[in-house]
Image 1 (cartoon, rainbow, N blue to C red):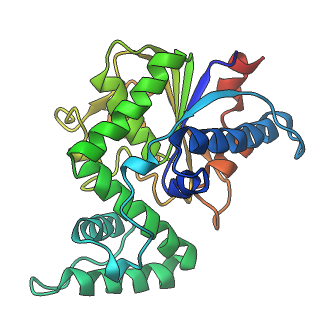
Image 2: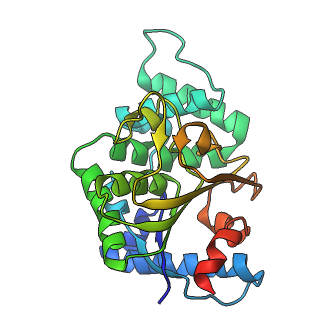
Length: 277
């Protein structure tokens, strides 16, 4: 049996709908795709798929707040995430104390569209509400975190591969359940270090400006594409103790954040091959 568990990122609620409201069905559909992507990365072949991932820890249904909305129609917490995230990208600050959140969101959406294109706006429509839903605290955060912990406890994987927001959920799950043991944590396109959006709101709270590798994790490898607008900063060792290596890759400036490209590009091969052969 394979010894790798995956944790998905943003924008995966549609799998739950397509599976008729089954989290297990959604997880299996994602697992099938991840196995295909990693097979392509490991072998260089576009056909076929291996059985690399034992399970995908699925949590998107715990954070769902309805279909994606244009930035100006987002709820206030998502608009605040958008505003703080855009600053990390070099975007404009709020012009004046009297500017409404809706006006600010509209202005930031236009800025994203002009600077990075429509794919960045579509990304924001998934990223901002889901980050806001998770970091807003309460039941959604606990349920998502516990869903990941349950899979890790049941599967007892040697490796966890966590993508996007899934890296945040996994980080907190492993800290919240220190009895869980993992030989290798691989984070892909992680926003864990994003200031004013994620980093300061983590549990446990970083100490003196530094987070740390969860106690049950032996090794931590972080992989980030140079154009990934969620992986800010790309070098997690700059703000977390215990990161063994930050790996930079160049997957696709138009498709900068998908797990498909991260697993297919081969950047994780060196670290995953010992566990799949």
